Amino acid sequence: MYGGPAPGTPAAVLVAGAVVAYGPSVAARLPWRRLLLAAWAAALAWTWSLALVDGWRRGVAGRLTTRNEYLTVIGRFPDIPAALRDFTQHIVSGSPDPWPAHIAGHPPAATLTFVLLDRIGLRGGGWAGAWCITVGATAGAAVLVAMRALTDERLARRAAPFLVLAPAAVWVGTSADGYFAAVAAWSVALAVTGRSAAWAAGGGLLFGLTCYLSYGLTLFALIGAAVLVAGRRRVRERPVLPLLLLAGAAVVPAMFTLTGFDWWEGYRLLVIRYHQGVGGTRPYGYWVWANLACTVLVTGVATAAGLRRAGALLVRRRTAPRAEARLAFVVAAAVLALLVADLSGMSKAETERIWLPFAMWLLPAGALLPGPRAWLAAQAVLALLLNHLLFTGW
Image (tube, rainbow, N blue to C red):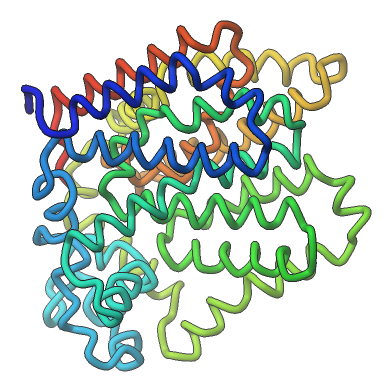
């Protein structure tokens, strides 16, 4: 338990109040590009405020320096190609000098991100935390870009305050999974807009990177496929789009494979490591339901209500407004990805952060709700309660 006001508390309350009071009206009238910048700025303010509720050291700078985190192994990458070649040799417990849990539990692009930050002089937990928050806060803007292309601008604008004022921000600040969520979101946004060959290939490139940030994020292919199906008119207009996406997606796997890292071997060894530790002791029957309950807390009651409306739209999709039906379809794909992850048995607990990339695609369901201010207030209250009453360790 964690209680009492802290440095971020007044700022978080002010940001929440401003978004509840003015978010829907500002989102409705700002020029589109300014809205994207405003959404990012507001998400930054909200995430930083929530992180600083626990203070600078506990809430930001110390998060990625604990014994299971990425920054503890920076010194083991003096020769990056050699470290990548030997990466799988240190995954299983009992192997020589095994990796800490988070390094063993992810492909090496996750750790390599922080190694490269260190190499360019951005050393220590403060810079790593700032990176995760700054990049992670762009995820909402990426989802807005995709929503506008897939549905219509009206729905995207209605979704904007819900993407800003999400309880998920509690875990975006500070965890590497917030950064992963942004990379995954931009892979879809670039792919669906398809303004040029470079954008499409860039979307594929980011999807390839996503798969080398977290093994579980290969399931993001379900959301990507849903987006392509929902935007099939664009695909028909640009039939080369899928080829560009595949070409871009092959780049990162090719680079890591050429350096000697075998993704499939890494995942096979991770399954062994997972069952050597908490995966072998946490009960499947409990967590298959508890994971979903945690997801409700991460995405909020407004999202739960929006999902109910999305389900109703899918049932009557032939008569539903086309834009809303497309939104419901993409949200349903995110739900499906979560269910597959849940049933796999590789997600027992910790889903408040490891499912952040999927959770971002549930939040637009709030656009389907009437009376957005009341729902936004409920989202803010839930986030503030979670951040002030609980301290989540990982």
